[in-house]
Amino acid sequence: MSAVGRRYARALLDLADDSGRTREIGRELASLGSTWSASKELRDVFENPAVGMSARKEVIKSVSTRLGMSQVVVNTLNLMADRGRLRHVPEVVHAFQSLAEESTGQVRAFVSTATPMPESYFTQLRGALEELTGKKVVIEKNVDPTLIGGVVTRVGDRVFDGSIKNRLKELEDELLGLN
Image (tube, rainbow, N blue to C red; front, side):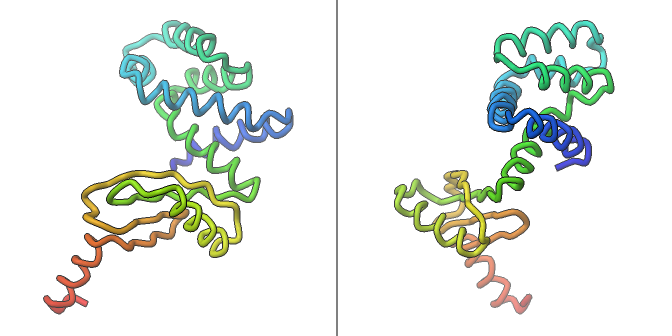
C-alpha cells in the first residue's frame, strides 16, 4: 500500500469516524473500487494526463451520483483530482478498508485454495486464525489451481504456505542441497 493511498485513506477514515459513518463510507469506497476495476474508461480518464481537469471533475460528479456517494467521498476525489492523484484511487480504497478493520480489531486473511472448499473449512480456519492473531478475522477466498493442492493463507505480513506446490519446491531445494 502506497504512502499516498494510506494518507488519503487515513484522512477519510478520520472524517468517517467523526461523523459515525465509517461503514457507509467503506461501502461507498468498495463500490467505487469495483467500478474502477470494471471500467477501463474510468481508469483511462483518471490516469491519462491529457484529460483536462474539468472533464475529470465531470466524471467524478457523474460517477458519484450514479453510485450515491456522500459528499465527503466526492470532496476527497475532487482533492485527489486537484493534486493529480486520481490514479491512487484503488490504493485509497484498499488502505481505507485495512485501516477501518484495524481500528475495530479486525484483520483480513487472504486464503487461496487449489479447489473450492466447503464453508465449514473456512469456519474452522477462521477460528484458528482468530486464536493465533487475537483479532476477529475476515476471510477473503480465492481458488488458485496452480497450487496443485493445499492452502496458502496471508494475514498481514505473515504467509502460511501449506500448498503442494510449495512443498515440492522445498523438496527440490533439499535434494539440490540449497537448504
